[in-house]
View 1 (cartoon, rainbow, N blue to C red):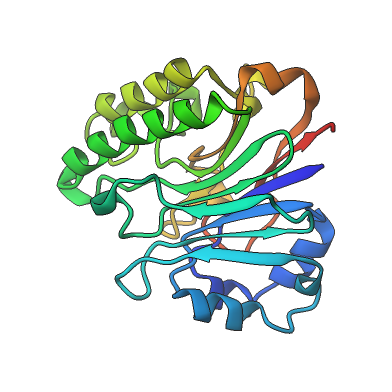
View 2 (cartoon, rainbow, N blue to C red):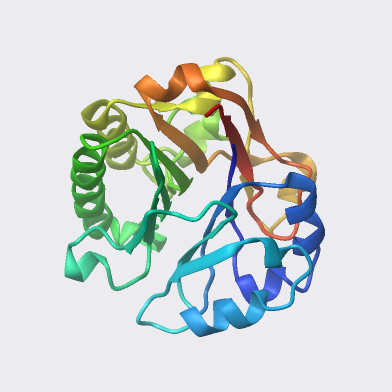
Length: 258
């Protein structure tokens, strides 16, 4: 089973690019999307009739605020259940979490809040990190989980091009956010599948649109496939698809042997 995650930075924008071709080339069984920036009906409308999308069932979770945040799941395998949110009302207003339950695992796509300019949203982010870890911990007790998405954090120095210049100054690389990620991995017993497979390799999944960052490969690894550690023997081919364009993020994927 091929599982893909992609922050599309606007579903209505990306379908006008090569999304159809990219979807067919990657051929996921399940794909989690983040930052759809559309209401549920607009997500469905954007994908309606799109070549390749007809093979999938679509589920989405939109923010109350229009044109903001949002997540979606496209799946060829009918889920047992689908649920939006983590059960904390004030954290669930932005459509940041969508879960599909399958026979032997939970698939969660998440768009973690950005701490924003001047780190003004860092307190919200810190609460999110604690509550989201508790949510995944509870899920993991029923069956293993694969949590994918834009976690808006570079966990280690190797995960961004310029760590010293950004540490404790830039959203996504503060000690609070790093600690939040460490807590998530340890509290739930999750493994960062790409880093486990490529312990010394530099790989990025997001590049600023400014200054030719992507061409120069001045990037960050913000997009992850996290898996319950007991699932790791069944995972292979953890990949960052840096050659796939259409968004400021590229897709990441993993194969789950069923």
